[in-house]
Image (tube, rainbow, N blue to C red):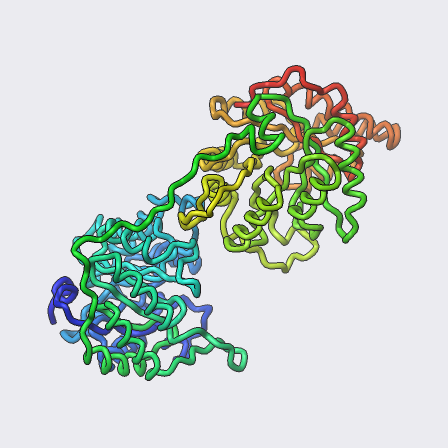
Length: 621
C-alpha cells in the first residue's frame, strides 16, 4: 500500500470508510457507553467493523477515536488513559487494514468552546489534542483526520498539536449546516483558505446536512483552495421513525452523490453518520469510475474578508455611555420584571425612579432562575413608556448562540443599547429545576460576540451591513470564594471588550477594598452593588442562601438588634447600612446600582438621597 502523502497527490479519487458509531449502535452498544473505550473493552468488535469497511472497498480507515481526547474522556473517568486508548484504536485499524488500507487518526472537537467564545484557551486546547496525537502516533497511524469542527480556532489548535509531534499529513474537515456555513457563520470560501494557510494537507467537510449540502460545500472549496479536497457526508438528514432517529438515504442515493462530489473536485470520499459498509461499497463502485475535475487554480484569490468597523464612540451610544465616557457619577436602580403579563407596576416603579433623578433602571434576566417577563421586552417597554434608560441584563443560560445573536440584533434594531452580560443562575435554583440550561457560551464569550457586533461583524467574521451601538457591562463578585478564578474571568471580560462592571451587593468594605486594589489600573469603570436590607430575615437569606453574596456578622448583628424594635426600625437600619456602604465606596467607584427590595423603589430612593454628582471616583480600580 502506498503512503498517505503519495495517495493525496496521485490525482485519483479514493474511498474512505463510513460511520463507526452507527455500526456500534447497530450492534447493540447503548449511547450512554463511551464508544472510544471499546478499543480496550471490546477490541474484537471494533476490529471487525473496520474489516467490514475494508471488504466494502475502503482505502482509508478512521480510528475509533472521534471523542478520545482527555476533555471528553474525563466525563467517563478515562482521561488518564487517553494515550493508551488512542494507541489501541490505531493498532486495531492497522490490523484490520493490513496492506489494503491506510489508517487515519480521527480527532474530533473537545466538546467545549474555545476562546474567544469560551474560557478554554487555545493553548489549553492544543495541549489536550497533543495527548491524543501522541497516542495515535504510538499506535502507528499514517496521518490524521480532524473532523466535524465548527470553529476554525479549535481546528487550528488540533492541527498545530499534530504538527508539534509529527510531520505526517493532516486532513482537516469542517462541518456546515443547512445554510452552508458553520455554526459560527463561516462559509467554505472563508475557512478553506484559512485551513490551507495553516498548512492542512487536505481540506473538506463531513457530517453536515447530507450529500447535497456537502456537494455544495465542495464546489465552493474547489474555487478557493489548491490542496486536495475531502468529503464525508451523512446518509441524509435523520428522520424520526418509531421514536428513533434514522438516516434514510439509501446506498444507491449516497453513491450517486459520491460520484457528483468527486466530479466537483473531491479526491477522498467517505461517509459519516448513518453510513454503513453498504453505502461505502456502493460509493466505491461509482467513485472509481470517474476522475476528480478539481483543477486547483495556480493562484487563489483570497476570500473577501469583512473589515471591522471602528465602534461608535461610547459617549454617542446612550446617555449611560455618555456618563461613563465623561467620568460622571452614575445612579441606577434594579427592579425585577413582573411574574405575569401586566407591566403596569414595573412601569410605575420606573417612572418613580426617573422622577427621583435616577439615571438608568437595571432589568435582571430571570434572576435566581425565576420565570419572569423577558428582560429585553421589559427593557423596551421601560424605554418607550417610562422616560428612563434601561440597562438590560442578558443571561447565557437560556439561549444557544443562534438565539443570542437573533435577540441582540433585534434589541439593537429596537433601540436598546445598554447591556449587562451575565452567565445566569442555573435552573436548579428556580421554580423549574428540571428545565434545561443551554449555556452555549458563557459571559466571556458573549462579551466577545457583542464587541464584534459593535464592530459590524457576526461570530463568523461576516459583515452585518452596519454595526450595533451596545454599551457593554459585565458582572463581577468581589467576595467570590474562588477570588483568583473570579479575577481571571473578570480580566478576560475586560480584554474581550467590557466597558463597565457592576458588582454583587457590597456589605464587607474591607474585602471590597482588597478587590479594588487587585484591579487597580484595569481602566474599567466599576459600579458598586448596594442592597438595602429590610429585615433580619432578609439579611439572613442573603447571607446563607444567595450564592455570591457575603453579609458579615457585624451587619447581621446590627439587623438583629434593630429587628427587636420592630419592622420600621429594621428597615431604617437596613437603609442606614446601605447609605454607609454607598458613602464608603463612592470615592473609589464610578457609581452605584441600588436594588429595590421587593419592588419598593422608595427604599432605593432613600438610599440615594444626597448622593448626587459630588465625589465621583475614577472607577478604574
